[in-house]
Length: 385
Image (cartoon, rainbow, N blue to C red; front, side, top):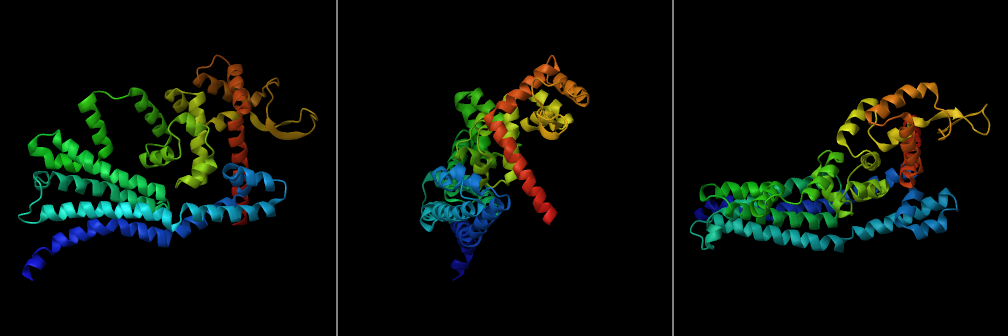
């Protein structure tokens, strides 16, 4: 009996390591999944994006109902959205990643349990405590990721597969970093390698292969600049096929909203910022434009979008883009001159040519239209509140 109590802390550690992550998955499936469905559904309906959702994700069904009125579209959207959400998040889709997570935590918990037992007969690698520290670091690395995805309602089946892979990767990287370190610091190296696997992988690349691919580093750096350094969001975007600024610029914001844990306005903003990077590649110029309130491509594009006389009826004023051949109103000359100088353009005409290229860009004009529709719906909701 005394021996059982002596080993109680070890058994508690075994139970925590073994059950913590599987319980998070069960709690998400039972308590949070339904909430995610209701939030997505409510936000799309609140902003009247049902038709756009069908066009993006179910084009054939959208063609059938696009001319049948809003009530039919909403009804069709509700049925399709519920069917797709239930299919994507069914019990069987969660079953495999849950089993993989449970097996992983069982294996790691067993290694920790045996390595902590006095006089254990584990192999030399296990007795050296390297594996213990590597697993401990990887557990501390991956557990906050599970919790953050739980809290942000994004612990989806494909996310679970990714997190299990990260768990194994972090533990392996911890062991590799320790093997390349001196014996006196191997336990600490194993722990830090498991806790900081991304930095450890960069260290291993430099240690084994010298400087790694500079183009890949630049690509990731450019994308992280738009994401404000959020590597968790970077991994979510990578999963849906967005691996560069170019791919982000031409992605549909609604798809990013459905597939990630971002709110809809942030999705529009990211795509809009990515488009600005395509037109203005130099970071210092983009930074200079910030003082004029220009953060995105639409911000530049709408410098010539305001109330102008109607070309067909000069007595009538309409909100529109200024045509290329029209004279620039006096009140726009000074701000556009300052913007063109900041962009290192020779004249306002060059700036207006760039703006016209943006207006003629189908993707940017589409984003502009969605921004306007979103703004109108947000204003309506605010007024109603």
